[in-house]
Image (cartoon, rainbow, N blue to C red; front, top):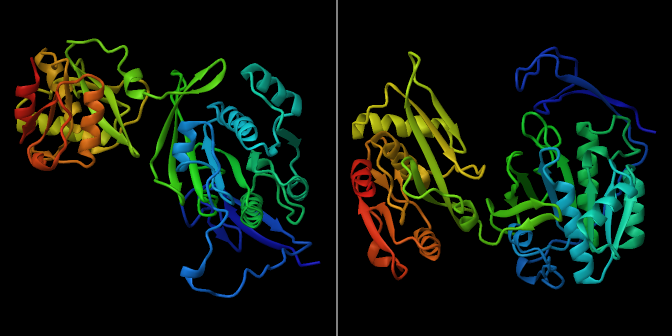
Length: 452
């Protein structure tokens, strides 16, 4: 038996130390170093994976994606399930991670005709069955295992050979080779490494559910994101029914891809046209409202950005951002004050993205500036107008990428005019029929031409 190994690990940043320390040398937090004792009773055998060979001689047989009859989920993954992949799904408690994966397992089992194993370390089999009945799912090909022992889970997985394995959640899995508690950094890292080895050697798709801490990291420090192939975050406003499945890392597809779902009684339902949904309750010809065309991965989305400027009752005006970056809002307000001449030094400015979405790309700058200008001047933005462009500190409007995809999405939803940067090469753009382009050079010009 190997000699126990003791080290001190920070529960915030994951920094390790051979001795006890009151303050973490990595993040600077106090009293976060926890003693971890590791004692391995058995060693993982080292498997030979063959001799080095030419990359051109590597065979590509058996690497075709497995179909996933959930288009939004499949598109975020890159087109379907990749055999031998390890996927990490994170999100806030109660956001719908277990519901989404339970729906996916039933669909995969029905489509492939092969068994699917769902491992739960937090819920009983009856609880999962109750959820499946409530959602009206077909569970003939889904097998449930309520177990937290890593060795037991891998034993049953070897016996069953499922096409898809779901572990909910990875924090509850413990290995008998380690003496640390469940959920510790060493246990989580060991479980992820063993599941990765099992997935690569057997060819099954493994999904790990990871809880999000107060700092927003999955399973504590981001030790898992370097091990897994794909990292998915299920996001959403708790006061709205819409959920966004966002890809932040994907070795088999595009990153920053987004799938849109709506939480209903029958579970998470795909939203095939999210732009139309987010604009359904728009109040036309209302001051302070503008439509931005943003890109979420490879998908263009039309979102309504609202702004309200109101005389302040305090010495320092407030700036409140909901759905947009706060520092970006301050930058746009400064440009409007200095370059456009709007009187904002005595105005409280509020900016909001309708639907609980988070818009982070600079292409929405022009729409934010237009919404603020519309609210200050009490003049509505034209109802058939969309805006695309980044705002610079000199008041200029700069070009952004994927312009053709943005224009096609705007034309599909019935918009007839688009204000865009003058620097865009219009001769190389395939402009949809019926859409008029209004090129502008500055924010001041855009506000004058966009307000009715």
